Each structure stands twice: as structure tokens, then as C-alpha cells.
Length: 110
Image (cartoon, rainbow, N blue to C red; front, side, top):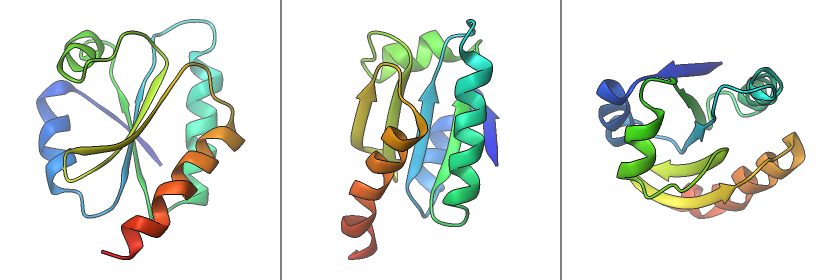
């Protein structure tokens, strides 16, 4: 399940989560619903392995400023508050799955 989260909670969640986190920074536009559905599909595929957060629109600008994000959509893979990977631009399900799969082997060795 994708969790919509605000700036007041995201930093705590990023630091306390014991598994990799995908943070989706997406503007509310005509593609928002499609991207959100893609994230939902991915969340079921990686249930229990990766946590997926979608920033609420009120927190998007502040989060982007804090993490040096120049545009949306941008997807961050993080672990304990540290960025492991970043993808900027439109991404389909297979692209996001490949990004997640690329970090899992190094995460599982820890």
C-alpha cells in the first residue's frame, strides 16, 4: 500500500523505517492518478520489502527544496534517511521495479 505522507512525518519515517523506502515526489496533474496506480501495483509486488511513500501536495515544495529536487516526478530510494538512488522524470512500472531491484542486493547484504 502506498502511504501519503506530509513533511511533518516523512523525516521520522525515513529515519525509523528498517527497509528501503521509495519516496515519490509527484505534482498533481493529469498523470497523477496513473502514477499513483503504478505505485500501488509496485507496493503489492514488494510488500514487506520496500515501503512506498507519496508526498502530499502541501509538503512537496518543502521536501523538494530539502532534498535538492529540481522537478517532478522524482523518485528517491532511501534507507535510514540516506539516499541510495534517484530517478527523475516520468517512469513506468518496469523502470521503477528495475530501480528497486537494483538496490535490493546491496541492502540485503547488510
